[in-house]
Image (cartoon, rainbow over all chains, first blue to last red; front, side, top):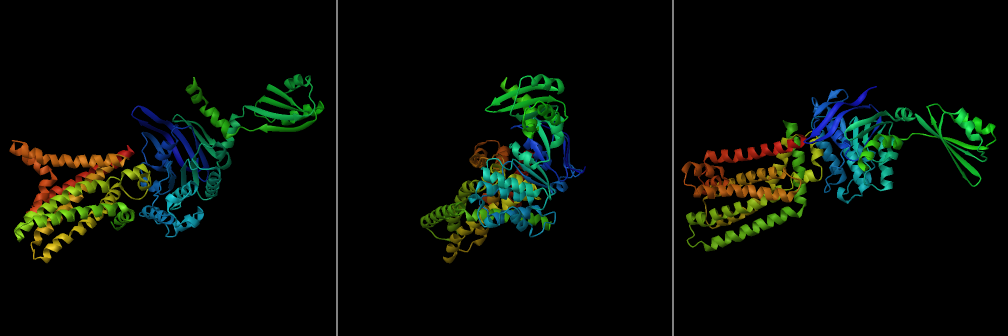
Length: 318
Length: 248
């Protein structure tokens, strides 16, 4: 696995505060990596360290194998960054702004003259290219901010909360834009919208109070969490004498029966990673329960996030 | 070197465009020339014996001193937003992540403010030219006075730029810059009050008004240049340190 970004035991301390403690994770080349955590968990600090905006107090940050502290100029060129607060000059026109960004980023490297034109096109900004940034809607302003991160065609694009504060339609637009970038860039994305992570990310890292709690491909993390699984069945005919049979033949932890109108909904909580749907179906069919449907609930990012940050919430409300 | 200068020129052009597209510069210029013109003609009318020596002593010298006081207000007003606004709007991060280094950022901002001040001072050249039409010909004093104003403006701008790097609130930056300038002005007053000759001399040397007066009188010495260049260099050095401190 080629690593685009690698953090090894990175820490950051401010007087009296430890913002990051032994942060270790890597971002695979070509992946869309979600970076999750509650407010103040250390997401922005980590991103600022990766981009070289602030130095770590300890540890190593590598971008394509190059140490960020030792080769800041080399690594800086490979990263496009959208900070939490979009760095926009409201009094500039969109095209003028991107041309300016290209100008200050192409002093030591060769960025094509038409690069900003391509970026305008890529980010769907052609129609507003002659408008002042301050007069644009929030969604378009965010597009401009993403466009500035793409100038120079960096290998890695780091987006800090790209959809925060946007209306639902703008969120969808920005999400589609990010999705379209995955073909040519490695993306590290921090967000609060867990649904978004489910839709566009293939890897995630969860940080809580400056400590990494989970990191890796979403599927692997999900299957690791699937020690307990939940299966739901919908049937038309239920008899209480079936319950002991189910407890006898399945590693059941709990069974919840809910009857409404002519239908009964059974919720099985089972131990283990095996798929028990065939077994359940077999038992229910043999006992003439008239099985209508059977679904296995997957462990989504939301559950992973909840379990990773549970300790903090508990501590906070105790 | 060429690429390095190109970096300064890109940011300088942006700053200049921003400045001249806003009414702020024109309002300040209007006030500067209005006030300067009013005082110049008042002094001219008050001057009874119109000879070259009296015109220099009673019109030009007081006019240059007045410009100095106006610059003490105008320069902090021009510089207060230069870095504080970049911090406030988080555009400083865009500059930090670009190929520009801190020195390029500082010099671009410095030269853009200098251009605006030169534009304002350029408007006042009209007054000595009017004197020239009436036969005045002591141009050495005029040139020396304007050179003094340019060096003084550069010093004030470098100080204002440093103040602007200290906070993201530009009102705080403005107050800081004005207080620093007043602090230096008070050095001259203290120099006059002290009984210790050496202390008085040192205090006077550290005050910019002492050096500026030599320019206005047309008695410029090399140490006057050294003072202003050191002043500018010192505050630019502090600004660079202040920008770097964000990375601590």
